[in-house]
Amino acid sequence: MPAARTAILSLLLYIPCIGFAQKKDVTIRIVQEETVVTTGTDQGSIILEKKSFKIQVLLQNTKGVYAFASMNDSLYKLADTAPVPGFASLPEMTMAEAEYNKEKELIINNEGWTYWFYDPELTWHRFNKKITQLDSGRVVGSKSIKQLYFLPGRHTLKLKENNEPLYLFFVAVDEEDGSGKPLKELLRRKIKIEWREEE
Image 1 (cartoon, rainbow, N blue to C red):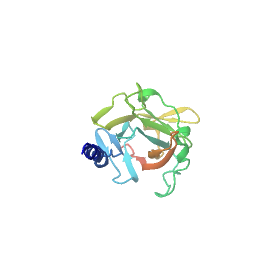
Image 2: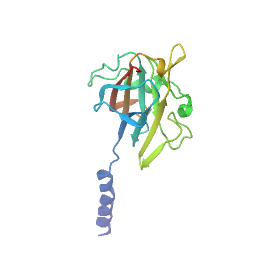
Image 3: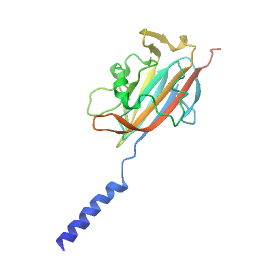
Image 4: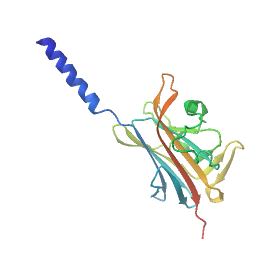
């Protein structure tokens, strides 16, 4: 009887693990002047004023998202089912950014990625300093963008001076191998930002 009771107790302890697996998710929102500007789909074009905006990232049970920003539409045109070029090497292709997004800028580069993450065990991250904790496993980080920083060339451009469309490509990782190499996508999101002419 004690052995049967132990087996039943073990099974009951295991069942909640099956029923309550932690769902992973990433949501990307573009916000300008407290208004959410959205494409309504995973890919599309939006129009912004030539002034500061925010990219808000909701992370649910995942640490971060890879971001690619360019004036070139090469990744934006990537088919939804096509593999992301260099996906398994994303960690090696990331560029370092200032902690807490102090310069309020977005790195523009046709070859490199940035990694926006939040790890409560670290004392720094790449978002604006204030992180919003919603509940267990869900946080929102924001990147305020006032200017573009171009690599190579290492020059900045204020948003009000830019006339070119901006292409954003985000990809989150669902599975990694033991060395941290990405194996499977969680999601991808593509956004083209066009600019409203000042009246």
